[in-house]
Amino acid sequence: MRWQEQTGPGRGVRLHVRRVVDPPAPPVLLLHGLGVGGVVFQAFARRLLPFLAAVAPDLRGHGQSDAPSSGYTPPDYALDLAELIGDAEGLTPPLPVVGHSLGALVALELASLRPELVSWLVLLDPPLDPELPNPEIESVYRLRHSPPGELEAYLLERNPGGGKLLADMLAQLFRAASDAAFEAMLAGRPFEAPAVGQPTLVIQADPRKGGILGDAAARAFVERLPNGRLLKIPGAPHAVHASHPVEVADAILEFGGYSSGAASSR
Image (cartoon, rainbow, N blue to C red; front, side, top):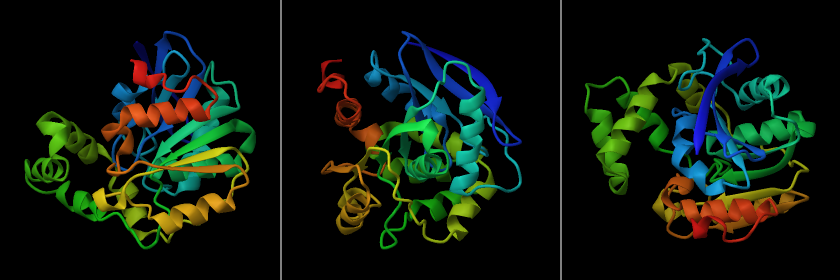
């Protein structure tokens, strides 16, 4: 698997984009969560091959993309991506879009604001439950400005299975992200999810393990969708694609009409 790194236009910003160029395959847009970047999908992306080739941008204020002083609502991110899709070579719409956490909200907004750009959606533990706010946002925001080592220790404690290397990588990404991106999420009102018309799969993590979408909220959202489906992965934490990559990749490929169990065979 070979990645290519490039830049593309957002709405008044430049976005850094990682994309799989070898082996060639139809593109799938992978949208990361708050404070990290497209690089978090680097290992997961190989499980979508040879059916789908990942295109993983850094959202504005994240990773190596530009960080303006404002404009960090889901519609802002979504309109950036609409510009990117319109300009980037090989991203012929409509595209499938997979989003985790904040990235899931952005995917919903993109599908609602520019439906012609999106063929189908997979939402990974979207923050759509007002009864289950994510406590890590405030903690990470605060610890980003603490002495070195404190954020790393917090991340390692929250996810001991990931090991020190993962905690160090995430801490580096969190520190590089814009304060304004965190502040927008902390100050934002509950997100009112649009009932998009595209086929949509919601993959729910386990609220007992840190998932932020409860059972009732998940069912209520999917029931509003004309083409919605719900899959819960018991025992999965919020970063469900990192903890259960085979199950998530298989679900994505099956939902997209590719071979069931393809990721399990690799």
